[in-house]
Length: 263
Image (cartoon, one colour):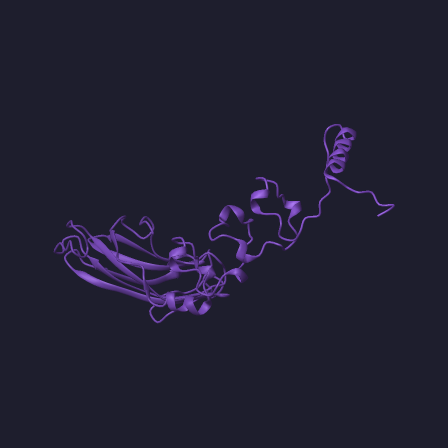
């Protein structure tokens, strides 16, 4: 046909040679890649970078199991809304990690019901109330219950006391001998010790006797109801290592109970 140039193999090759010469020995052919023509073997390691990935392009199904470990999580990234019900089991909680302040009030009440402070054994020390050391039996919030065990002539005596670190505490009980402060009926940090007595008892050198007291302390949102059961053994009474401990000396034994508490 006239007006049309006939392309032969030789013509094509000569054209390519001219392109190579013009390009300094290198030729680039612009090719349009078809859909799904680029395979993974055609991608060099590290060739796909962050800017090359479309936003939201990586789906959940494309993440390998175990691929995201703790080092890949930002601090504070997992909030309570991301935890499944029952996901945090007892085995995942460190020992003593949960403080009482984190417990619901209803659970506090159950845990605080009738807790014993254990058996507390005390050797009689001092010859009067003033030089006898304090032995704390129970401490809760601003409140404390302590005892003194001392020699009183040939006898041995024990006394149990209430204490509060905050002023204006209401103290009462069926057996308490609390009489309030000098100018009011409240238990204050400055209330004299003799006016904070919860119970007292004494026994002869060859005998034993019981001491017991109970009280309720209230100050604002804090309150406790507690009791103490105790026994006093004279210095020459029969030795009882199972209860009072070994040794023929004057001794006191106390068992405190926290009946209820709040705050």
